[in-house]
Image 1 (tube, rainbow, N blue to C red):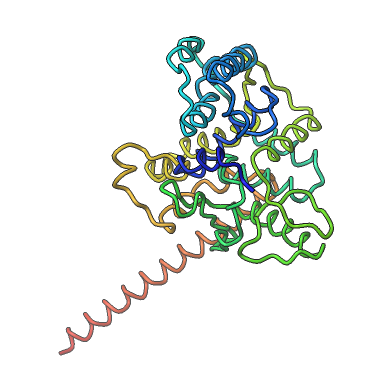
Image 2 (cartoon, rainbow, N blue to C red):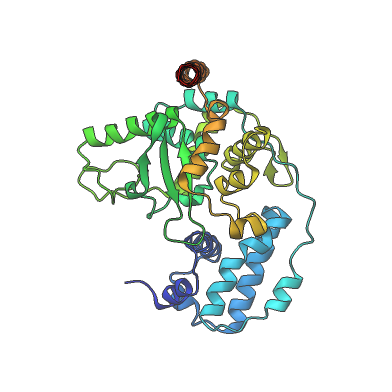
Length: 350
């Protein structure tokens, strides 16, 4: 049975993404404080809890980037506020470190992602790398609600996936043909192992356990996978102020953002939507359909793809399709011109 203190904690959060982040914050706090359960924690005296929170703050100040400290304290503060523990938060905030100018994070390059794919034989891990590369999504979208119900096949060998469904943040994202194929291979492997996949099945699941319930993958599992893949691929990163210049998960998002911005013919407002940004007033009033979003996404498909041979193959297919459409246009124009000439000839003979 879920603890009463955790029920209160969760009831005060509206967004699933915020809930997942706050859970991580609270889990980190518990690992440091080493207490048995949350209900027993809130029974301690305010003085004891205040000291515990201050000690934890000092700990993360010594081990994390200064700019991330206030963020990591959000879930902790929310827990105690929702459980009516009157801590001296003004004192705690005064202990926050001054902010530093953030380093300019770099994107993963296509060549680095190619090395990642070569560093793992797991169909799930390969599908995951392709998913992050194709969507630029935050890894927090992959949780217990990230199910097959929100994944659909669309045109040109691509797939559409609804992120943050039924929430204010929901938006459509898309998988390139190679990312779609990789995900299909992973799902087919699961079926061959006896799993019955329906609309309630997680798009990504944790490791197989015969006879046990299917458990969806979550953020912490993704981070562990990416850490191992980067290590095996021997990808070099430079550490700057407790952070690497290429972030393990956010490097995919940075690459996605860079590619969309370099494509001058991609509508900038729709590009912001594909990144899950509200984009100011345009974000409030602009409500592009899934078809409109895909129309802009497809302009960047070739640059988003990872495999060089697959990219070249798609270029040829697009060229053939464009030539075919041009030829059809020429035929149509010629037919219209011939019709016009016939009509003029008939009128002249009347």
